[in-house]
Image 1: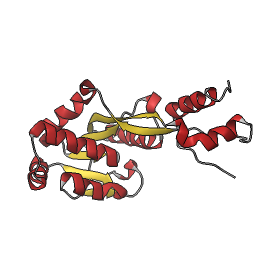
Image 2: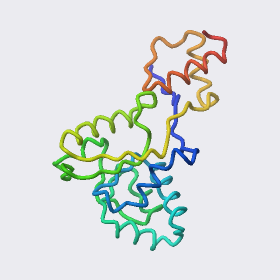
Image 3: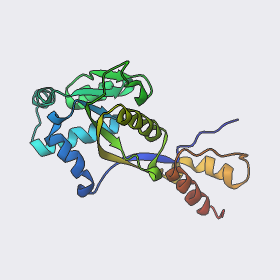
Length: 199
């Protein structure tokens, strides 16, 4: 019987210097043909930074600023209501489950400039969302798109207490096989087991 344990989670970047690329992108939003959000947290961080940088509070003004930029906004369908709630705009393109759906069949990304707001897609932090995004960005680059990645989030180990039951099963030998989706998840597993005296 398979068990599921969320060994890593996504957290907003905390260091102001790490957010400079996102801030820069917000200030020149009209340079981007498409703005893609990797998830709900990316939308929230984007909205918070935009309000802070531009001193915007009124949702109608926020929405007006975003529409005036002329960019098309793209989210997963499950995140579209978050975009409307925090930014006051409706997604121009909603994807059902993979960033690779944004192809010439859905929108012409060739020779366009895309802003990607979300997780880092560095090797060490790659989970399922990041792998999908990395594969999509490779395809878009090959199609001639210009990409600007503005990290807003990072993948971090989950709180070990949230996975105490699963970690206990692993430590007492009750689990036959383990599948990990990122280096961060592997680190979280090793740390959780070390805390239980398993090397």
